[in-house]
Length: 257
Image 1 (spheres, rainbow, N blue to C red):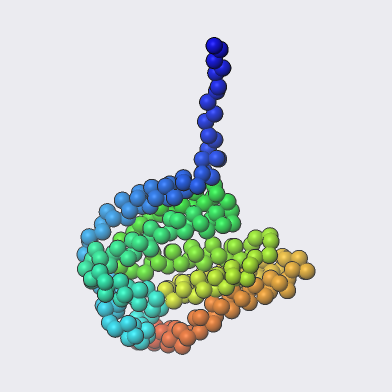
Image 2: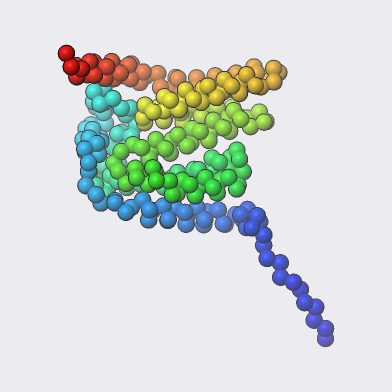
């Protein structure tokens, strides 16, 4: 009996990358590598700013926004840390875990955000960079808000790109979700003011370059996104202005006569 040899067809890399099981497994491996990188100094004692974070977060939840009038920071991270410490405790390792979780979450979110606009190959590059980024690795081991800042900024940037740079008309939820994410960033660190300003300037450029027939629609989308941010952040604006005035006053007192 004759036997016909059948050549083995190995799967191509592209088909493997699109396999439904591969993405979760590969992202899990990247997260595992990230844990190894981001726990090297996990048990190190608090430095000054970390102690300040714990001290603020240890106050009653409703007192935190008022306390921060003197500190100069927004309240979201401290309120999350308060809730976290009520469950896990206030020691170094317990509070560092919260920052580590934010850092680890950047890996799948970088993959999702890049893939949302630029495709699967870019998504993998973004996930690898998020897993090994030295800045995230450092602050993923400290009781400070910076890994949360990266996480929320990544979400806001991804949603901005999806809401305002794709060719087809986006669903109205994308601008609104972008506005919520940017507002969350603003409630985490004042650096997000510069991020929001840069995004607004980018949106103005996109509006200028858009075909005349689409400008009205794009204007509505922009109002939805940035209007949502403004509406959500408005309650904190008086405190922000007070903080800036206090900072200028303290700088003036320190000047030599």
